[in-house]
Length: 165
Image 1 (cartoon, rainbow, N blue to C red):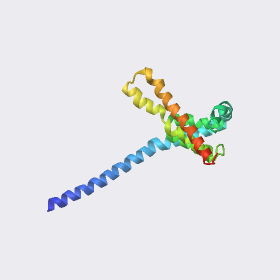
Image 2: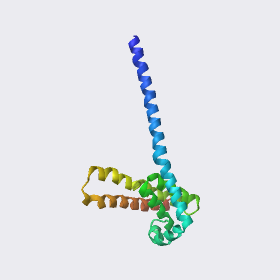
Image 3: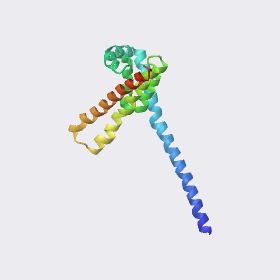
Image 4: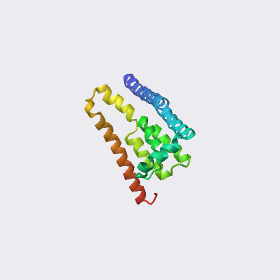
């Protein structure tokens, strides 16, 4: 009977160790991935705003971003999302807080953040490491960009039907 008790105690310790390991891993992800991405999003918006690049981007990208119901400045979300999903989301939040985009527009901006976010990192980890045939590289990037554009269009339609745009 003492062996059964010992086995139960080992299971409890296993659960605690598993939880602790998961918590440590989650903390590491937050500190090493999410926080730097959020800082990147914030710094990008601030740097573009301070230097006047935001105005230039707004003018240049306005017509294309207008297709998605967004001002040209929202292209910064796409730029930062290209590097990290969290950076794209943080950039959308910063643009919303600055009054550059509305809540509905921020919702549209989340689509490319999730659908094409971290494209640089994924490309490096998946395509380069596995030595995928180079002739497919543009296709793989193109599919992610197409998905992001389609997602933004669909979100715009949904928000319009809901009366939020």
